[in-house]
Image 1 (cartoon, rainbow, N blue to C red):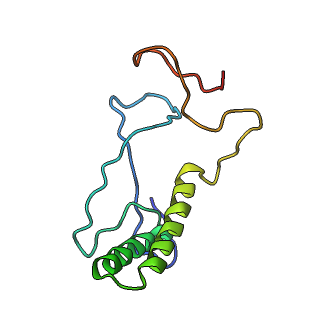
Image 2 (cartoon, rainbow, N blue to C red; image 1 turned 90 degrees about the vertical axis):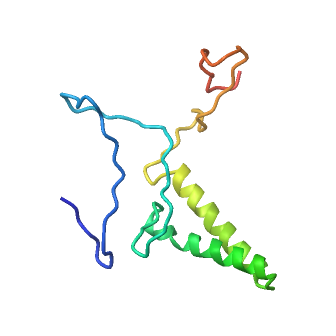
Length: 125
């Protein structure tokens, strides 16, 4: 079942298949890479949230102004940079993100041990 919001023509889902299928309900956090499919048909939908589809238009406009050496390039580049920042913020800090004082907010730590077998510490030494 899916609900299609008013004004939209479709709903887009991202799914991960677990094999074998778990026999109980579990919560999984997934950190991975997602292959973005090229947009070649008129009916293709970008995998960006609908509120950020205009960032693609801003990028295309900026590249066209750059190619033709149009004076509007600076304005288009500024619009694209603003949209890109908003999209990165949306991805990095989702709506349910609630930082806790005294806890590290980044996912990347440091380690002085060689090789990939030693986990990084997420706290400053």
